[in-house]
Length: 367
Ligand SMILES: NC(=O)c1ccc[n+]([C@@H]2O[C@H](COP(=O)([O-])OP(=O)(O)OC[C@H]3O[C@@H](n4cnc5c(N)ncnc54)[C@H](OP(=O)(O)O)[C@@H]3O)[C@@H](O)[C@H]2O)c1
Image 1 (cartoon, rainbow, N blue to C red):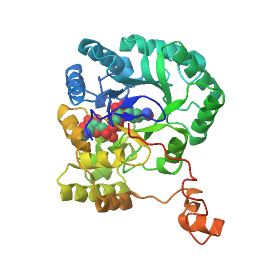
Image 2: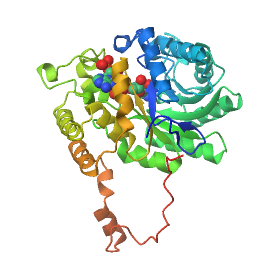
Image 3: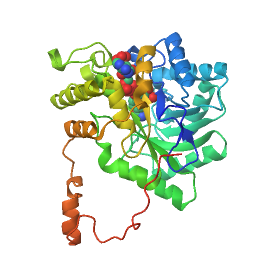
C-alpha cells in the first residue's frame, strides 16, 4: 500500500498515489494564510512526499493567493520532476475584484485561469484540471466543451470536478460521452469520518460514470488527529480549527463529532496506530475513493500521515468506526435498503431476480 504503488484514477490511464499531497497550506498569503507554512517548510514537505514515492499533488489558483502554485512550480522545476508528478489545479474563485469574468466557470474565465496557473506553475501543461466549485450559472455543456478544447490545445491532460451537485456532474459526464468530448476522470469532494454525505449520491455516481474520488479534508481539518478536545466554546486545542477565519472550529466541534473522535481514539489504541493514520486509512479504503489528499503544515505531521496505508484496518474495528460516524440517510436514500428492494421486486429475496453477472462491473481502482 506504499505511495510508489500507483492506481488508476477513474476510467483513465492516469496512475496516481493513493495519498495525494495537498498544497493548500503552501504559503501564508490570503484568506487561509494563517493556516499555512513558510517556503522552507513547504519545500521539506514536498521533498519528503516525493522521496516516499508520491506522485500526485493538489493545488488551486486561489490557494494562498497564488503562492501555493508559485511554490509548487518552483519546487517541481528545481527538483526536475515535471514529468514524474501529476499536478492537479483548479479554477472558479474570482481573482480580480470587480471583474465578473475573472471568476466562475464560464469559458472566458476558464481560458484566463488556465494560462495564469500555467505561468505560476512554470509549466506548459496541467495534468488534472478541476472546476473548483459550482457557480450556479454556467451550463455543464459550456464547461465540458472548454475542457475538451484545453485538452486539444495541450494545456491540460485530464479534467474533473470538485464541489458540484451530483446532477450537474452526471449531466456533464453524459454530455461528454454523447459528444465524444474529453471525459471527467475525477471528482474531488470532502470525505472523512466526520463528513460522510457523499456516500449516498456521489460514490455510486463516481463508480458508475468512471470518476475516481479524491477526498479532501480527510482529517476534518485536523479534528481527527485527536489534538482537539471538547471544552470551552465547543472545543479546545492548538491548530487551524481554533484559528479559523470562517469562525471557530469551522462547524466541526459538535456532539456527534466528539463521539466519532472518541471511537477513533479507541480503535487507534487497539492497533497501536495514531488517530490520524486510522482516519486516513478508513477514508482511503472506502468504496469509490481513488486517492486521499493529505494536508500537513509540519514535516512531522506528514511523516505521521505517510504511514496511513501501512496496515489493514481489521473488519470489526472498521465496523465500530462506521457505526460511530453513521448519520441517518437524507430522503430518498433511506428507501434504497435491501428490505425495501425485496418488497418492491416482490421476490422474497433482497437481491432481486437478476442473474449473476447482470449488474455492470464496478470500476476497479487497482492498476
Ligand atoms: N476541493 C476543495 O474544495 C478543497 C477544500 C479543502 C481542501 N482541499 C485540498 O485537500 C487538501 C487537504 O485538505 P485539509 O488540509 O483540509 O486536510 P485535513 O487532513 O482534514 O487537515 C489537514 C490539517 O490537519 C492538521 N494535521 C494534519 N496531519 C496531522 C497530524 N498527523 N497530526 C496533527 N495534526 C495534523 C494540520 O493542521 P494544523 O495547522 O492545524 O496543525 C493540517 O494542515 C488541501 O491541501 C487541498 O489541496 C480541497
